[in-house]
Image (cartoon, rainbow, N blue to C red; front, side, top):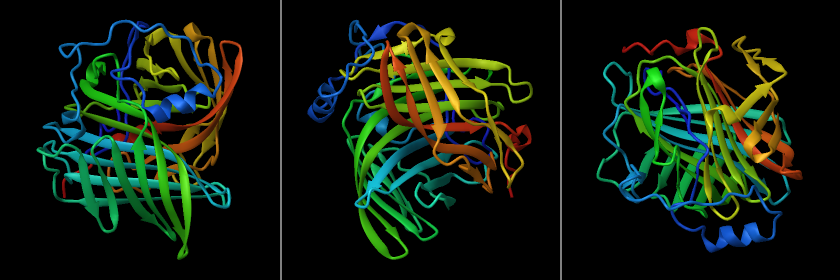
Length: 377
């Protein structure tokens, strides 16, 4: 992730975090057989020379213990994904659960979801509130409320929610090991504080989508983030990007900035090669820019739209185009009340080779007034 939910009064939203050097490092464990098989048939990805595997003393997150809830002011588990049904219709979604135990927050638990029907051009959003906190002795996430569910231990997850006439019921299996951002799993957000942060960058997904009472099988790929820390109170904005390339590479990049003047606080990224090697990207090496904007007809907020993501040291340049331009999550009862979160189509070049893929973009802080803490009732 990311910084996600720094400013929430109840549980703001997804996340991002901060800078780092360009020293390559090895993945914590080797990719699964499924990941290796899917990679060998694709074009080679960015060439990374792995160094020594981080030791237990260097890594600040251990597994499976790290999968469960922690004693922190804010914590969230986040998924995004692309689904294809048996009629070749595409759907995208994001699904996140926040746990907040900071003084002055309105609720201890919040779930938010969005669903895009690419064929119909529809984008739906919703949220649920749960007043119980998670069991800190658990070795994973386990939350259910009003027919919504998010359960899993890191290796596999069960996800489900209903928005309008659409119901998703999914099983997601991780095919790559967890990736610790900034090498040890701790990201420094400057005035906002520190957060622990790891990602499971590829999960195979199967399940069903029910539309108006008709159930259809779906398959797809997902991305998962888990982040926690004591970072309530500092207002920040961010542009966060996750990318899954068809050559087997996975990339996360984020720009964190001051909502009052758009001055950057931090910029960082992580790239995973098809073979599973991990590279922490230099702060000055990651660039996220946009030449277009889109103004929400609901909130009036102007968001960037259509992005260029470059990593100069890897000779990587990607164009990211939103599948559904209107992918705003608006009308939340909590902070921020509105943000942009949507699927993007990815195309570009990596070391002179053409690459394509899919991804997600998250934009928070483009209306600074939205970042005021939610008052306690």
